[in-house]
Length: 70
Image 1 (cartoon, helix red, strand yellow):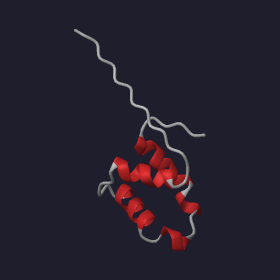
Image 2 (tube, rainbow, N blue to C red):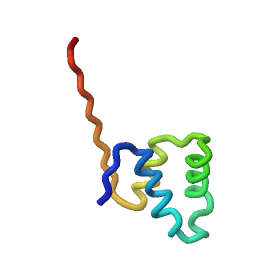
Image 3 (tube, rainbow, N blue to C red):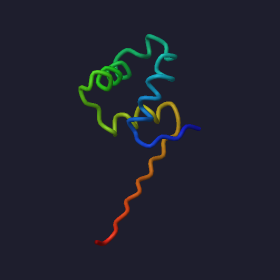
């Protein structure tokens, strides 16, 4: 199990550790476009990153918001 502080961090880990092992014919299209969009900062949504991550494992995201009165 891997733990990350953001979806971007998890996706970056996926790009470095999982993406290279994907067969070339599988990389065509969806995964390659996501790699390009993230790597060249063309824009990739959290939703799209999470969809791709969830195809390879379970993804659980938890948001904590703290509010303190002044």
